[in-house]
Image (cartoon, rainbow, N blue to C red):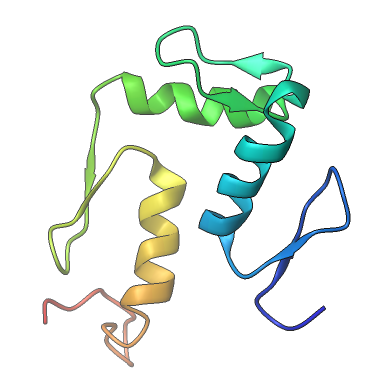
Length: 99
């Protein structure tokens, strides 16, 4: 398996990124997702996945302090900051800098 690829937990498929993996699971394994959202019908493999998703229906948003992108989940904005703005930090105090 190459770096950056993700393995499907239901079969032997290996996908390039999270979006491809999500689409694959939805298309080929949708009936194997025991946890589904009562508001939008999206299915999840685990109760934790559903719990994270339910946060998106609460209306609370987290705004990126660098580019003003909006996110519905705290862990998503943390990942965004780490991946997209990793160089936008002060090298002395590690504060996030506006670019």
